[in-house]
Image (cartoon, rainbow, N blue to C red):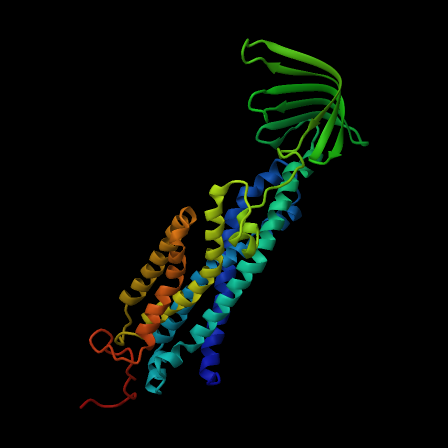
Length: 381
C-alpha cells in the first residue's frame, strides 16, 4: 500500500477543512429553518431559550447524516475545479500522476464521510431522536401544565385550553376554566372556583373544587350542566392508559427495524425499508465523490475552463438525490423494491469508477482521461 505523499496531504487538508466548514454552515442553516417550528413552545408555553436550544439541538445529528453525502460532493467538485483552474491539476498530470493518484485524497475524504455517516445513522441519530421525542412529549404533556400563567388562556394541546384567574404561591389555582374537546363525541366546558395541580401516571392532573361541567347534548341540542364539589381532570395530551409514548421508526435500532413487532402490520414494510436506507445511504458519499472526480479529471483540458462538465455533474447529483427520495418512498410501500435503495447508492459510483480508473483507453469517448499531459514548454512536432 502506497504511503500518502506530501501532495496527498496537501489536497486532503483542503478537502477536509472545506468539508467541515460547508457541512457546519449548511447544518446551521437547516437547523435555523427547522427550529422555527418549535418557536411556539417558547412564545405560547413560556419555555426558556436554554430549553429551546437543548430541544432543537438534538435534531442536528440527523441533519448532518442527511446532508453529508451532498456536502462531500460539493467540496470535492469545488476544490478540484479550483485546482484545475489554477493549472495545478495540469502540473500534477505533467509530473506523471495517474487519475488514481489524483483521486486518492478525494476518496480518502469520501471514506471518512462514509464512516461518519454510518456512525450517525446506526448509533447517534436514533439515540438523539429518541431523546428529542421524549423531551418534546414531556414538554407537551407534563411541563406545559405547570407553566399556567395568570389571566392567560394556555393551550395544553390543540383540543385542551386552560384559563386560570390567579395562582397562589402554594400552587393552588383560583377561577379555573377548562375547554376540553379531546373526546370527539363530547365537547365540555368546565368551571371551578379553585383547584390544585397533581402529578399522575399519565402526566399532570388538576383537582377541581366547587364547579360545574357544561356539555351540549348532540341529539336534543340541550345544554346539560353538572355541578360537582370535587372533580379530577387529566391534562395530559396523551391518550394512552399508562401514558406510553409510541416509538417512531426513526428512533429505534437496526435490529428492531429489520424485525419489527408492530400492532399495525401495514407499517412493517416502512420499518424494513428504513433499515436498508440507513445501511445504504452513507455509501452515497463515495458515489457522489466519484461523480465529481469524473467531472474534473476526465475530458480534454480547456485553457479558459468550461461549464458543461461541472453543470452536467451538478445535474447528475440532483437527479440522483431526487431518484433516491422516489426510491425510498416506493420501497417503503413495497419491500420488493428494496434492492433499488442499494442500487441508487452504489451503482453511480461503480459506473464512475469504471470510467475513471479502468485500464482500457476510451480513445473515442475520453481522449485525455488516461493520458498524461505533455511536459510544460514542450514544442509541437
